Image: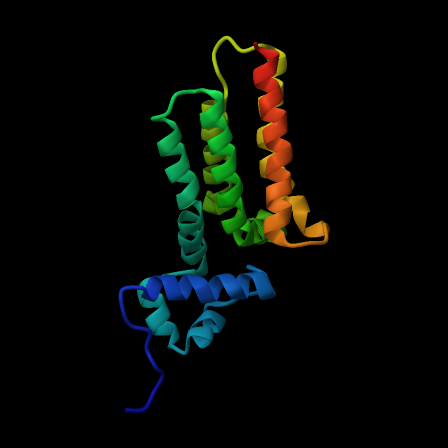
Length: 192
């Protein structure tokens, strides 16, 4: 049979998101059209519209998928004692989750104004706030809480600056994490 090939299977939405993410990174979110996404998949626009009515829906789905590890981290951390070992593990897992979500952050950084109406930024802020709440401990000194904030901010915002540093991405992530863990450890020493 002739015609445009169709993407089939349970992972159709994943394939669409993957191609769209590549195009959003390459061309920019605002400059990428549904037609280009369909062409990248080798399907008709009608087939694409069957799964997603707009590219905004695709980006929201990408955000939910890339944010999954952070949601899992928050759920896990809520069941753990609020001690130094748990906080260290939260930072470690958060560092890994941020590396996986780096493409989304890049898109948001480049197309922030266009994405405000989608609520993606608020969802990310809610996730960060949830992690922050899990890191603090009642009765800790102000200085200790500031160091915890510093460690968390180092992991979160440091991920944005790593691209400016030469070297292996994983090596850079580990070095950033090590620095954040040293700061976190000093917060515990403060309250001894």
